[in-house]
Length: 236
Image 1 (cartoon, helix red, strand yellow):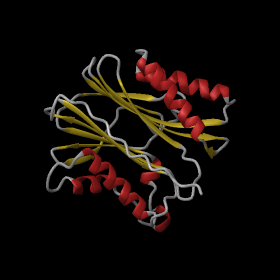
Image 2 (spheres, helix red, strand yellow):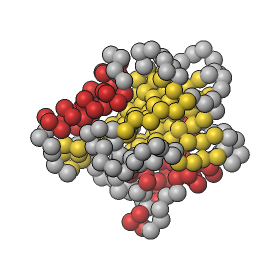
Image 3 (spheres, one colour):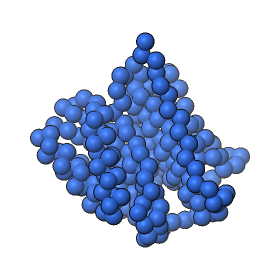
Image 4 (tube, one colour):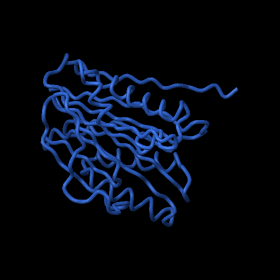
């Protein structure tokens, strides 16, 4: 079995700072976690709040704390430190090899898409993710199933094109990517991001992040790889 992950993201058009933050960490007892957060302070985008959230959760997970407990502690601390003026939209997906499960932790209602044998569907969670879980995220656990993909997106992806009356149907888009063959995870992330940017007419109205996690039936090799493409804008 092999874990494959890819992330594609872009900032809101003409924005000098990005409110979205995403990081990957290896879990101390096997597996990986991907943490996505969008921060706001007094109603405005705040990269510092997002970075503080992600880095604090990374540290707690690395120390062995469970995702839900780590999230609740960090979100509560940020709320208290900023006297209720800071908000965080948080999503975590973990492949936890200790419990042999996929764990999804969320305090928002942005859907998660899962793909198996070319069919995409929105995950049906038990409980109500629509309720206010700002400080107490919901935690959902699924059995690891080889050959399954999980796709998490920020709300900037789902809202792409709404100002032009062309809503993105994420499930249909994902299924179209699997029509001929199973595409690489990075290709999936790039395609979703590209389509979202296109629907905003090339000028994203919000920060956009796409995360893809795949449980591949067999490893391509025993080599672990990470690849980063990080554009540096010339400020001159």
